Image 1 (cartoon, one colour):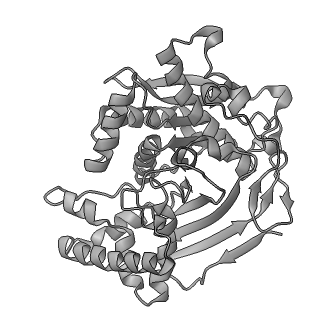
Image 2: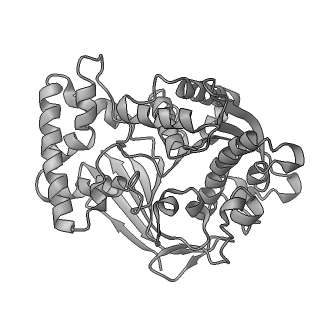
Length: 391
């Protein structure tokens, strides 16, 4: 049976909805359990030399997609991001025509590739625009009612010769100064604007998706569009959290103590540097209508801290430090210091007022597994899902 837990409605900081349930990958029917299990089915082969082959590594058990099912939506979005990775590897290996491996990753779900996004700095493919084109004889109005019309997807870092230098350069840029002024992000942002314009009144059916470095691009794009009044459904797989991974500390008390101390330090720095400016609360709260799907693995040091970031909000309320928590949750010391002398300061990329947080609680034997995109379409995931809102 599903278990729903909603926080005290008098809290002004956030409202939380936590869900644990069994879900079938075929019809998304709830089954009696205390975990969100994304279906049951045989495991896909994970041969590293064949990871680009959809029939070997992809979710080919999803012969029917119900767009009302969270597992189906997540699996398809992850597959479309994987399609971008394989597009770039097809380019590097000069796999063309019948030898190309990328098309299966979107055609299986009735998408068409409308545009491949190319980085002018190294000619690598870093993103793609897909259009949903279901055949009329397969169209199920109930199942496709929630489907996107367009998806703009971005891959993460590829550590191969053809793109490694540029990708790693952008990883470093993300940590040091952000991606806002890079040619890759400018091209991505222009594409998002173009797709929203194509969609017209149906811009709500434009979705964004990204993995790792691509999640950072999707985050920037989603925030920019939200400020412009256009809220886009967004899937952020293993998004970078630009802070020390406190979540990786095994001792719970020590972990909480570090987060509480960090909140007081952050709030203190913010109070000094933002004196008379309102602390950016209005700008942060203005993004509350945008509720991205943030998908993380606690064994992944790059994204794990999102688990603590959202959970810590309630802790600060519980100890009577809600005002400090509210100030700390929308600021980071790093970005406060980087913003000194800059008009409008420097906005933290990784902080969200609202989100649906999905945590993969299944075993992850190594970093490659914990940070990889493949985990998100596995048919036997153990997921914990919580919805957070800022008010």
